[in-house]
Image (cartoon, rainbow, N blue to C red; front, side, top):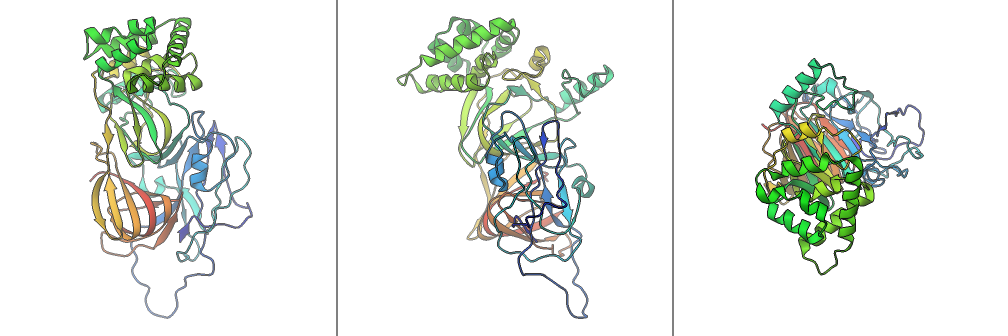
Length: 470
């Protein structure tokens, strides 16, 4: 089977729905023209593995901070001018992925043709048509609830400043809110499950992010360089309490009366506009950040709070790990993100959503730290390509990338595969040594592996593989 080929132009049988701003995006599969595989002769059929590699259909999410072009381009569908922020590939109940189980003869792998898509007006679901015969069913029916969620994230605007609880905090918080009778639909609800939410993002494009409390001396230098009296006063606790002063700074900023917060943000923006090209690099970068945040979050006191954090730009291939209790925000760029399956977020600015200052500061680790940037570690390399990973210190997930220059590249147990470049054929065996039915992925297409297997990737392209750390 080849995933990603062009399909017939008829829209019959295509089902796509959108509810509460959620965009359903079908990643399509097609057939190889003129190459139908059949079984002939009277001999016995060869034994096949019980594990299967199936076409996976993710769902996209429309959030205001998303890019209008990046994810449609990856999927090979026309952009409709509306933001598409994330593509979800997993079993999360908010946007569960589906697989296609073939009901007719399988088709041999071949060259993928251009994608075709039904026209979509602004706000309508993007659809990349499936071309193969099969029955749709939830991926969770075959693999249960995966402990991780794989995403493509495309940010044109900054996401909120936020913190995720550790496992003990998540369990205690969820149980307390359940006992208090706070409904899941209540905007004041902070804990939606009993899980933690460590995250890893790997840049596909230059990716700007804020992560971890910056060294107090550097932050104080920025405040003095900007020269705004209110900002300098707000950041003063960093000088008297370098290890915990960030808590006091955030409390003073986030509890300002609304108009005072708007005035402070406006004053910081005016100060940033006066920073010229002759200033030192850190001050110029801080001024650029302020201008960027003000363009999309005018009047938000989070503009000032963001200056507490390390400001980094990942180059393609670099990763950023967000552990529990670390204040962070993604600013701009496209990346592959993997996280433990959870919705637990405590917000601290750059958002119109509910902010619980006391709970945010109770969970926050205020100690200064560097940004947890990870560079890829090569696992295997050879004439056919390499396999690399990012060493996130959690058991919930592992993310690998096969860079194929002909192949084969061997990928151990993985549950979800996503091709971001080229075209790669997937073969392999299950743990009993029985062969898997081959399948080919082209750019923007994904697959679900239904059980433990060793995969061989052959072709030219890049494929991200997500699984659970062994």
